[in-house]
Amino acid sequence: MEVSGEEEALMISAIRTLDNIIIADEEYANIVIEKGGKEAVEKLQATYPKSATELQELAASALLGMSARARAKGREGTKTNKGALFARINDVVDIEQAMRKEEVKASQIDTTMPDPLLPQYRTLLRAGQVISDYVKGTSSNRHLFLTSDCEHVILKETSTKVSKPGRKIPLRNLVGVSRGYGPGHYKSSLLGGKKTSASEERSLYIQSDVTYPDDEICLEFNTAGDREKWFEVVTALLLASSSCPHYLQSL
Image: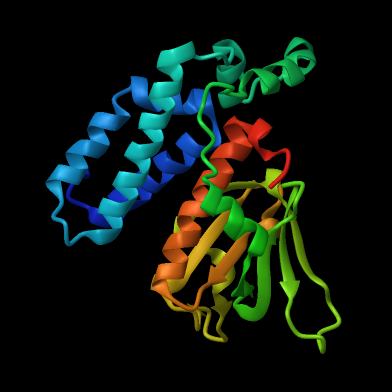
């Protein structure tokens, strides 16, 4: 990050990646913190002017996530088995690791973390909102909400004239969220380029696990304010899903 600190687009991508890592896994987040991630983000935040809005917002989000992780670790310490973690990183699979899989998964649950889903977030997830859902560049008006058992994100068709019921995405398949465009916002053109009718400042990309590419969610909201509101809600939801799912027994 120090070498390419003046490349704003690259730094935005780097901070977004860190933010998604922090949301996705407690132990990965702790490694980011231990290796100086917090200081690096703070340095970038100080280096770039307030007018670099996207970078500043992403930096603030990443620092907030790191602070929450650090507080939780300070109370109880990390519980995840580091040997298993690095085996996953190096794609090393053996019989013993496979037998420990469920044990490691359970050890990643952080029972000390405060519930990230504030009451107003839960209310919004229950009520939902009508949005534009983009799939391969084509938008559909759908009602976005979370099921009461917190198992699925629903994108329900709003028109009775449409025969398809919409989309039902398992929450466990979603791993990250970022402002702006995702792959599904774009439609390929005849000349080999890509285009979208969505407004970037009103768009949101909810990333799916690489093994479930069709579960990515590319949205456009009516206002930039609505986009910001849902960015906060989805960030909290994914943090709860990955690190403290005991808060997701019901809405």
